[in-house]
Length: 405
Ligand SMILES: *Cc1c(COP(=O)(O)O)cnc(C)c1O
View 1 (cartoon, helix red, strand yellow):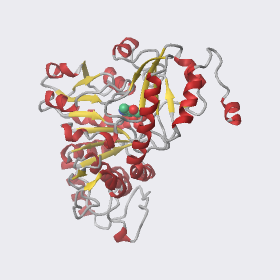
View 2 (cartoon, protein in one colour; view 1 turned 30 degrees about the vertical axis):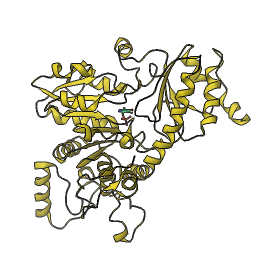
View 3 (cartoon, protein in one colour; view 1 turned 90 degrees about the vertical axis):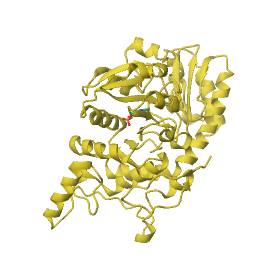
View 4 (spheres, helix red, strand yellow; view 1 turned 180 degrees about the vertical axis):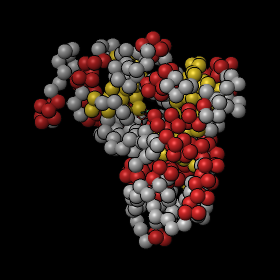
């Protein structure tokens, strides 16, 4: 599993390009290579919004350079919206894990996607080709055209025919939220020709899949999910080549969707355990998927061929009763945390998508989506088993249940 990564290093912290290192090693060390030389162990958190400089001629030249190519500023930072050293550590680390030149972090996954759309439409390329399903709010952003973009929905086989002279982006999610449907990234990247392919890699993480190696030019994460990993930080990030990264930094500077430095710190810490968390949770998820597939109360189980910690399943009974019946498992939207979460996509994560479009994308009304955490598999199965048997109209009293177990 641990293949060496030999991506180009990003400028801010890796002055000397390190030898190729395995993913697990990068997860712990990338973005921290300068710390020991500075006599530090944990990375410092730089909360400054502004930075003193007695040489305003030099500042003018640096701002001109940023306006030209959006490259990260050399030397001391200028202003928080132009770049932050703690956030840059996370960006360096994520780029190394995804095998891209650069990465640019944002306040949320949706802020990151918005910046990509703005970069492309600023170039007059306002048309997007996208494959359903996508995360509900990504679907909504494209369908509503809030940022002046226009979308054509297609299946992977229809991408080439859907391309137009003004197509600026092709977007896919694999495994997709919430059905865990997979697309062949290499084939899709080929179908895109010269149009950049954006792959949302939130569900797989670079531990299971590195889309840039398969031809995606932009790799998007809701870092709120597995990268943070503990349900306590909201963030987004785009891993890509330095040319696009420069444009994304310029949009971030102009529109302000910056990541807070404390979030950058928490994300860097989250990355260090990412491979261990993803592998442990995936093993449990695979076991739960197998048990669900054997269960007569379950009509269908969706589990990706590449593995992962997400399981989706359709129940014969009322899915709302399952949500109301869990005790150990938390009934909540979001995913990728250390604890197991379950939600009903048609009610929450994909509610904003038109009902016909939603069903057409395979998001049925009996589908449940579960994000498997790090609990013991038997405890999780006992909870699921009880919830699947929950009698209609009798939601469990959670406080009481927990007090007794
Ligand atoms: C959650 C999610 C997003 C949106 O990210 P936020 O951090 O909530 O803005 C985008 N894509 C996928 C696949 C997601 O699960």
